[in-house]
Structures are given as structure tokens and as C-alpha cells.
Amino acid sequence: MTREEKLNYIASHYMNVMWQKAYSVLSDAHEAEDACQEAFIKLMRIEDKIEDVTEPRVRALCGIIARNTAVDMARKNGRTDPTEDIYMDLESKEQPKASPEQELTDKEAVSELISEIKALPDTYRDVLMLRCLNELSPEETARALSCSVNSVNIRLTRARKLLKERMEGRSGL
Image 1 (cartoon, rainbow, N blue to C red):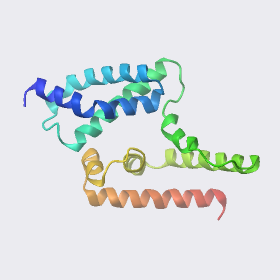
Image 2 (image 1 turned 135 degrees about the vertical axis):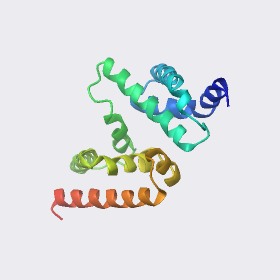
Image 3 (image 1 turned 120 degrees about the vertical axis):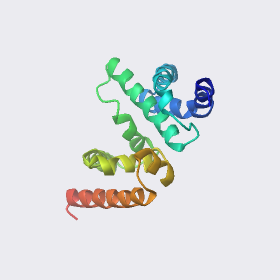
């Protein structure tokens, strides 16, 4: 496959994923488009290292580069911690009206969960993010992390168990 064919394939098949990742960080369509353009330029620089553009790990790579580019843009624009947006989806789900006490308790629980996810070892946090938040399949996650599907499943199980233990430890259950 020629360089031009690879880049055309990436643009036609992965640009939507890239835009979604950038938008999830920036929350602005125009800024997300700018981030995608910058990310695509970065991909052009490493295109020769990509052998098969149809592999799921290339899709994951495009998403990661787009997200990281968006994070850089957000930092340049003065946002202190743009990675918080990844976790804000947990808080933004529409729920039925609850009492003020229940809302406060729920917000505290979400904040604790976010803190515990951030505190997980990289091995567990990465697999949790790719499988649960980025919704990659076990096979795609294994390719992105350069490990076996069995390792992905074991890490995910351990991540969930560790997260559960930490959350129970915080609440004193």
C-alpha cells in the first residue's frame, strides 16, 4: 500500500473516531476539527511505521493521538486538567430528581470513584479505560496494549476487583 493510500484509508475510516476523542476533551466542534488536523499531521510523520492500516491497533493509535493532541490544545487554552472530561461523562448522565442530600452523596461517590480510577496502577487503569470508556473489544484492547486477549481479561477482572476493594475500604463496608 502506498503512502497516499494509507493516509486516505486512515482519513476515511478513522477520522470520525479521532474527532469523537478530540471532542470528548475539548467540547467544541471547531476545536475538535483543529485537533484532528494536527493529529493527522502527526500520523503523517509516523505513517511509515504503520504496516497494516486495517488493524484495530491503528484505530486505537489514531484515537490516542487525537485525544493527546486535544489535551495539549486544552492546556494551551488554559484548561488546567482536560483529562477530567473523560470522567465527567460519569457525572453528566441524566438522573431522576433526587433530594439535595442524595445529590450530594451521589456527587461524592462519583468523585471518589474518579479518584480511585486515577490511583489504579497504569496496567489496570489502561485496560479499564480502553475496555469500559473507549469501548474497545478485548481483541482491539489486546492489540493496542501489545498483549494477549487473556491478559486483557485478567487485567480487567483485577482492575474491577481492586477498584471494588478500594471503594469498599473508603466507605468502611
